[in-house]
Length: 279
Image (cartoon, rainbow, N blue to C red):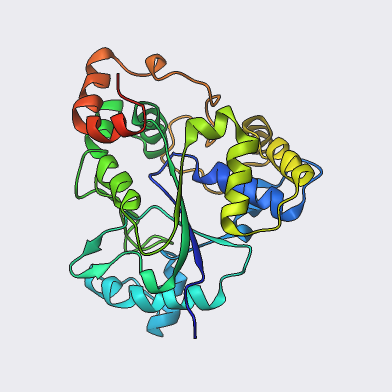
């Protein structure tokens, strides 16, 4: 049985993964009004969801890290067997090998969309979402041991490593096609960039449908929905109490001191330069 069915949607946290899933949901649903952002899970699966590990193991977790490593391949095979043609698999994992086990299995991977965002902007949202100070967030984004989730969470541990390593790991993928886009380019020309995504995924392309999907998955539309109905992905650690917190054009200079910005340049200059983020 061919298992190369997973279309990955990968990113470092707070880089546009949720917005992209909202767009894909609006496009799939052929939206004529703002979408219910709490339904974006219908467009995506997560290979790190604990219930998949429970299913494969035949028991309920929690699981140790070594048990997760042993189960991960069968979990991705399960996802590959059941994922829909018009679904993506969300992940925040870096594409690395950990203790001899890949976090992303090529045998299950059809393609990937990877979204990269300027870390000078990421750090502000990342700090708010995780209840951290800006300095703590800067340090965590440069921590090779950085992880998300854990044994008692709804998601098993995801391994991010540093921001630079995360981006580089997906840039170097060669066993399956990877479409890499900057968050900033999505903002500047969403019709072009999201249209390229649809074609890359091999979905039916329709210009009018694309325009509606972009309109009804805009930041303003998602923020308004969250204000009225809440959003299930909002962290209970969030300091602002909002997932869609700032306008997309917010400048990093509003949130970072010169010293903090210089630290991020020092930590991530090489990868930032590749994407036009370095001076």
